[in-house]
Length: 145
View 1 (tube, rainbow, N blue to C red):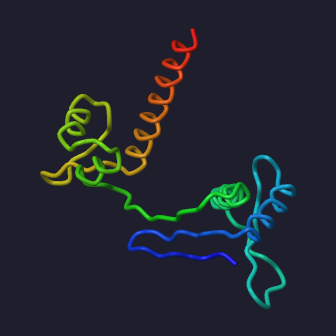
View 2 (tube, rainbow, N blue to C red):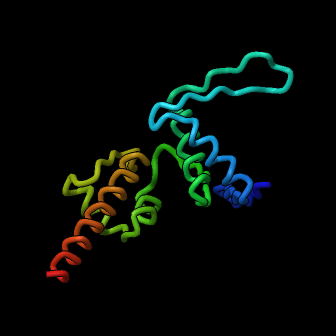
View 3 (spheres, one colour):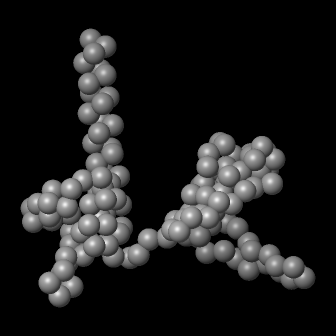
């Protein structure tokens, strides 16, 4: 049986071997892309279709559990302060402000305060990670030569 560990800002679901086997069995029945789910409640004869976007999230969770990963569910505000964004990016606030000033990361003003869309910060974090991986692969290729 899954264990849910709740913290202040997220819930961590620790799946056991039974959950993993169930997720693996479900994955064999799901299409590679475009899985659609239906929500059922007790006593309900027909399910409520889950929207495509939410179905994609559910499919990702099932896939992660099937692979034995820990699933973390977290909420984030739509906008972040520069301090929160810098923490999320693993950089200093002055470095973040330089990137904003250079137009590398979009931001906007709310009064005198700078705010960033969470989606933009997460996209920057992903792009940064991809650049790091590419640099690592390049270094590894040089080492192999």
